[in-house]
Amino acid sequence: MNQSLSNDQGLFAQVNGLRMYYETYGAGTPLILLHGGLTTCQMWAPVIPSFSMHYQVITPDSRAHGRTDNPSGVFSYPLLAEDIALFVQALKLRNPLVVGYSDGGETALHMIGGISNSMTVEWRQMIQGPLGFEGPGIVDIERVLQLNSEFVRSLQQEHDIFHAPGYWKSLLMQVSQAWWDPPVHTQGDLAKITEPVLFWCGDRDVFCPPEQSLEMYRMVNKAELAVIPNADHFTMAQQFDVATMVLLNFMKRVSV
Image (cartoon, rainbow, N blue to C red; front, side):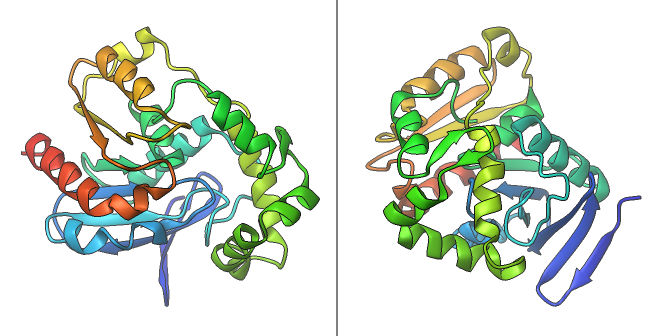
């Protein structure tokens, strides 16, 4: 049985074997914001004031991230999409809008049929190098500690505080399962999408490059494409003011 349980800092929903944490702001048409991998729902804090003026903004922590647990230890994009689909049912949301960034975008794309359509060379180099992802579920923790001490501290601050000390190591191992096996969406898959879709990316993103977004945009009948200037995969957060205007423009037109 799916039900919501309140606590001092937000809400929890029993969904798909998870105790999924989420926060809500504003009122109106539901808008679900899906965060990127290795972050939490707090990444959306800069845009919530603007979005909550028009929508009921709902920001969950995805499987294994932040306050949401993952008892099975299994982690994949289809499973993340299933989590959110059941989350929508549990909260009895009707025709919610969904915005995803990075892993959240991939989850959203699975729900309707995203951000990338194949693993780039730069993506493979990053997960094998600084992130120490040697294979699905295999992470060189010592390499991560040597090369990314600041990154480790951020993971501890965002995730360990809600779990046991050292949880960040388990999180990396779980996420590596999906990052080493990204889905490839065929033209036939994308052609089945009938709902309006906005593909948005940074013009300098080498992990989820504009060329891939353009390719997918051309495969979806009701798609639009927005490229945020002077933004790569990680500096996109510094361009959220531009992204907010683009997203609001799109959502207001398609949710009329």
